[in-house]
Structures are given as structure tokens and as C-alpha cells.
Image (cartoon, rainbow, N blue to C red):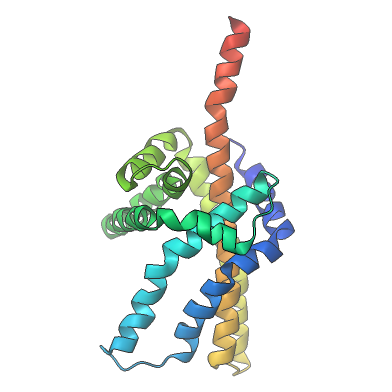
Length: 229
């Protein structure tokens, strides 16, 4: 697995399909970043619960639509935004369970030590694809990701950290610049959050590329076996 090649391909795909990615993520940006930037709830108030839990509850809907769009563009289809949400919506509960299981596992890994948390994050990065594309239940999706990434965990982890660093740097730089210029306000917070939401999609593109690479590997091996026979 050539991780640097996958990173380059992921960046190229992200750049080529940025308008479509932005269109699919626009509802997430409007809802989530508006809550974060403009809501000023009192501690322990219902509004604070909404700000904290609202985006998390809606995450499987937005992420499923994004993944459907990425696959459609990768296969040459052109789905509308509404089609992406419609196709991804039935997997909501299973996908939410996947994120819950993966989140608890990663959190436990970080509590024990940082490195185990990072390894678990890399090993479970494909669970959402098995859930969405193969209609697997949450536990089987997590299990499939854990098993199929075993041989590639270190390359995946290295690529994952690189892509996460690349997507985070522009947001951190912009946020720091706004603070230096004393321009931090709800509007600039919204803009920074919107930029972060769009750039995080680069991580999803990279993990989708890994999924495709791993899923194609057995087929290639089988083809070689047939030629030898």
C-alpha cells in the first residue's frame, strides 16, 4: 500500500469535487456551525444540551450523505444532494451505533495511552463503509474494519495523521490570525468552523480511498492465482 500515493489521490479528488462536497455539507455547516458560533447558552440549560448533542445526533445523516456522494463521484455517477441524503438515510441507526462503538473504543485507547488510541482509530476507520455499502450491522462493521486493516495499520496510521495535520493547519492558522487581528466574533467563528467542516471531508476521502484499495486487493490476488493455475 503506497500511502503517499493515496494521499495525493485523495487531495486531487477532494480538490476536483470541492463544489459537490461543499453542497452536501452545507446543511451541516448551517446547522452545526450556527449553533457553535451564535448560540450563547447558559450552563446546564436545554440550549447548551442542544449545542452539544444536536450536531452529534445529526452526524450520521451528514456523514452518510457525504460518503454516498464520494462513491458516486468515484464511480462516475452524478447524484444530487437530495439523492445523497435519501440513499444514506436508511443507515442512520446502524451508522450511529458504529460511531458510538468506535468512539468509546478510541476514547479508551487514549485514556490508556495515546498510541493505542491512534492505532484503534486507524483500525476502525473503514467501519462506516462496511456499514453503509455492505449493510452490515454496527458490530460486524467494526469487526470487519478491525480485521481488514490489520496488515496495513501502520501505513494507514501514518497517512491518517498526515491528512489530519494537513486539514487542521489552515483552520488553526486562520483562527490564530483572527485572534492576532482581534477579529474574533460569531461571524468569523462561523467562517472558521465552516472551513474546518469542509476540510475534514479530506479525511473521509482518504479513508474511502483506503477502503477501495483494501477491497480491491483480494480481487487482484485471486486474479493472480487464476493465472498461475
